[in-house]
Image (cartoon, rainbow over all chains, first blue to last red; front, side, top):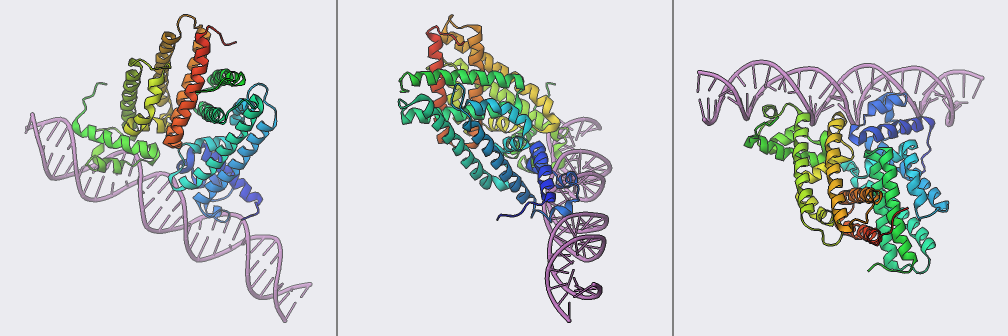
Length: 201
Length: 201
DNA sequence: TCAATACTACCTACCGGTCGGTAGCTTTTC
DNA sequence: GAAAAGCTACCGACCGGTAGGTAGTATTGA
C-alpha cells in the first residue's frame, strides 16, 4: 500500500486536484488532466487504475493536507475563543489550498459511486476536528463545564464551521468576515455564560 | 414572460425537479426526464427551449415555492426565538419538498453556465429571509436593539440557517436535531443578553 | 383546417477506457 | 562486455456508450 510517488504521478495528482476542485468529479475530464500533466490520456493509466482511483488518491492527499492544517491551528493557543485560530484561518486557507477547495467542493455532494468511501474519510476528519475543539473548550472553560454543555458547544461549533465553509464557497470575502465576526459573538456570549458556571437547561 | 403552463409542461417540470434534485444539472438526463413525464426526449423541445431553460424554469418554481414556505413560517409567531419556526420546520420541509432539495443541491455549486442567473435568484431570496428575521428580531427584543446588533444577529442567523441546510444534506436526522438544539442555545444566550440591554462591543 | 404536440431517426461531440505498439533504460545471461 | 530479454512510460487510434440537440413527419384536437 505504501506506493512510491514518482514525479510524473505527482504532476498527475496536481493537475487532477485542480480539475476536480474546479469542475467536480463528473465535470473533470481525464484528457484535460493528462494534458495539464504533460502526457496523453492513455498514459494516465500507467499511473492510476482509473478515474475513481485517481479521485480517491487526490482525496487522501487532501484529507491529510487539511488534517495537518487543522492540527497546526489547534497547536497554537487561541487568542480569545476555543477553535478561533481554525475559523480565522479559513479564508486564507481557501485562497491558498487547492486541496481545501477540492474537499469543500466534494464534501456535501460527493460523486455517487464513491459515496461511502468518501463519507468515511470525512467522518473521521470531522471527528478529529470535534475532539480538538472539545479539548480546547475544556481548557478554556475549566472544570465547571458539564459533559452535556461540552457536547452542545461541540455541535454548535461544528455547525459554525460548516457555516463558514459554506460562506467560503458562495458568498464573498466581506460577508465571510461579517459572518465570522457575528458567530464569534454568539460563541463568546455562550462561553462567557458557561464560564460563569451557568448551565444550559 | 407569463407563459401558460399546460398539464404536459407541468409533468415535465415535475419530472425535471426530481432528476435535478437527485443528480444535479449535469448528472440529470433529458431522456430520463422525458420518460418520467411520459414522452420522448425530442418532444421535450415542444415545451422548453433547451436544458438550460428547463433548469431555469424549475429554479423559478423552486424559488417561489420556498419563498412561500419561508413567508408562512414567519407569519406564525415564533414560540421562543425569532426565526425559530423556519429552522424547526426545515427537517420536515427537506423530507417533503422536492423543490427544497433541488435548491439545496444547486445552491452551493451551481452549474457553471447558469451561475450568474442563479446567483441573482438566490441573492434576493436570502435578502428576503434576512429581512424577515430582522423584523422578527426587532419585535422580540424591542427598542433596546441597536442597528449594529441587529446586523450582527442577522449575519449569525443566516450562518445558522446555512449550517442547518448543510446538516440536512450530509448528516443524518439525529445530528440535525442536535445541531439545531445547540445553535438555538447560542442564539438564546445572545438574545437574552441583548434583551437585558447589553450591547456587543 | 391548422397549429400544437408527439414521434422516429439521426447528428455531432465527448466521455472513460482499451488496444497494439514503441522508445529507452535495466537487468539478466552467456 | 555485449547481446538478449524485460520493464516502464508513453503514444495514436479506436471502442461502446451517452449526452444534448435537430430534421422531418405523423397524430391530435379545437
